[in-house]
Amino acid sequence: MPQQWNKKSFRLKERHGWKSKPGYAICVIDRGAIRFDYPAGWDTSVEDIQINVRDRPQPDDNCILSVSRMHIPMELADQVPVSELAQGATSTEEEGELLESKVVTPGPRADGVELAYTETRYIERKEQKEAFLRLAVARGSGVYCLITFSFWAEDLAKYDPVWKEALRSLTLGVEVKDPTAGPVRN
Image (cartoon, rainbow, N blue to C red; front, side, top):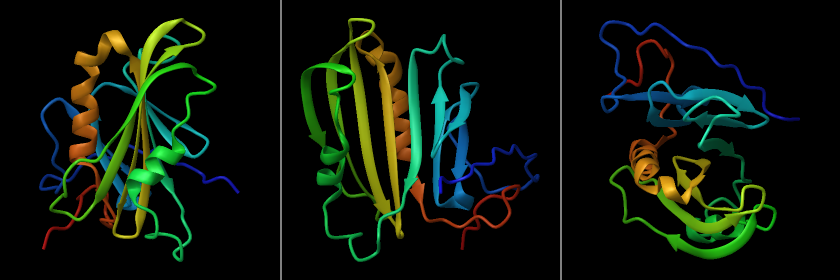
């Protein structure tokens, strides 16, 4: 059965624990299982099993950042490197002509989250324009996360900082009991 999503906005308590860079908003999925930042004012929506964040509402959007929680059986969970998971999940066959694809594995993170992503450059079939698809797989604290980001190649300078901030701010497996107070720091 597909996961049911509930989008809720809360007025935060005066001394809440949420922090983000100026100009960014915070998205928390599944009571803290996944948390990341995205540009404030962007359009958010729910589709099937993912949260979509767009620079503008459809059909006027130029990019889409999609985030979902992956449920992987515990007996398989840590057997495959995240770089292989990211590479295995990437396909542009339906999107258009492949120009270039590479796997990026950022260095180790202090919080223990493992992360890898593919960056694929292709010619989008419908618009016949060069586009990027970035697909990240992250693993930490027993949580798996899939993040995709699609945008036009001409907008790389504009949207690359959005991708970097989403990955930098990503936290996994931090339980949040009261969303109006934020995470409890010991």
